[in-house]
Length: 108
Image (cartoon, rainbow, N blue to C red; front, side, top):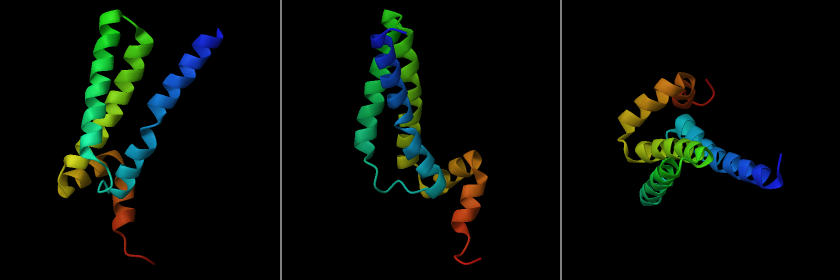
């Protein structure tokens, strides 16, 4: 594998995986208070534009990377702006065990 391809692949992997810990934390805790909705709104628009650019150019690495990043950033943004009850429903649908553990009183 060429050095430039390896660097690009590692960069894409880092970009795509960077949003996963935040998304998983939201699913587990349902807490989005510390997340800036404006920052994620701008990020979502940026990824949508990069995805469009990749599609126009026909560049699959750009398309795949930005599609994954767009999906994860959009999930985080949606969870940030949802009311608590809807946030609970979404998170419970993804990981039902986290919701029951989180609501369990300490020591039980």
